[in-house]
Image (tube, rainbow, N blue to C red):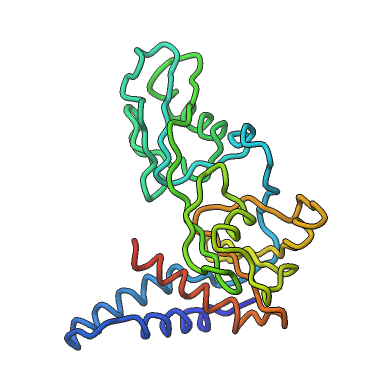
Length: 252
């Protein structure tokens, strides 16, 4: 387990190196605000495992497991209500909530379409009587993941929803360099105050067609490719987590 103090310190060091020249009082206030945001975003513990699902090779099955996220747009068709009825082009906001007629703000991010339907049926059923509804994906919001370490072009990669997997992200970042350790690729996901990680053997995915070695990513995931000499969590991985937290704090 990684202590909060050490993680927060990493975040503070990252910010210290990125703040520009400004008046001392203003700079101190800016630093305090950013440091507070970073501290709140930094994970407090690291756990192996988590909800990493194997990527499918069939785009037509995407909606079976797809989870809604910010900037997705859906249409809601309620049987018994006039067509439209304020239920078209519903966008999920950056906070994960959608604003809907009758019921107001409802958190939909993180839910499958079936789960979102169940939530809306329950909420709207308190105000309206109707036999059924359907949810239709109108458009997908942008997905950004962070690919770090021994790849051709490390940094933020934007992927489409139907191509949101570890192998696609690595390819988008220019592939794994020769000195990169393709058998020990780390996928990191921060949920609340916990960072979950999974080790992928991309070499086996490519050469042995082991489909279990490619997982579905979520917006904000981190992929880290270590050098061939192995991984040191405190030296190799945690600095990238601090940069991730700083980026989130600065783009809120």
